[in-house]
Image 1 (spheres, one colour):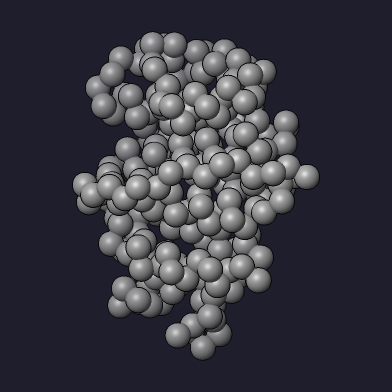
Image 2: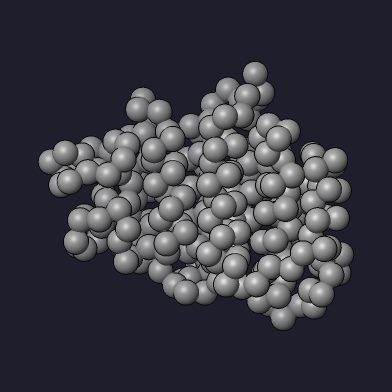
Length: 219
């Protein structure tokens, strides 16, 4: 079996990133962009793989089978991934990242509400999920700024899929990696675990209990 390591690899003998190992187990052509996994979920898996320390990356292996056959074009999946990432990273990220992450939270909530048929002409009409309320409450200044920004802007579904959701994932992982917390590796692994569970629930209609982890200790 290939050993998990950072980056892309020419073949299994040279090692594997998380998604290359997924392609191997799924019987697909060797690739870090296999068809068996939703593209945004795969992007998160690659980011977690590459930003986890060498000492702890092996702990990700058990998650690889659970990411196989999670593929769909349902935009709700993109929104749920972006929301899980942003609400996880927002409370621990540095102040200069909080506004962008808070905007990502609101954009994902708005998109989910829109796709579910709720009115969303103005963001104030949308009730935030409990996870979003908890995350936003911990950064009140950034949250208020984000609400003002969101009331003045409306993102399209195409723009959300191409730009807003991928940016939320990227910014969230960077925010966690650079946060002043004691164990970013565990938070990254928990983020990926929870996101896989979210995607499984939406795509397969099955639910796995994945309580949100307690916030890590700042240093």
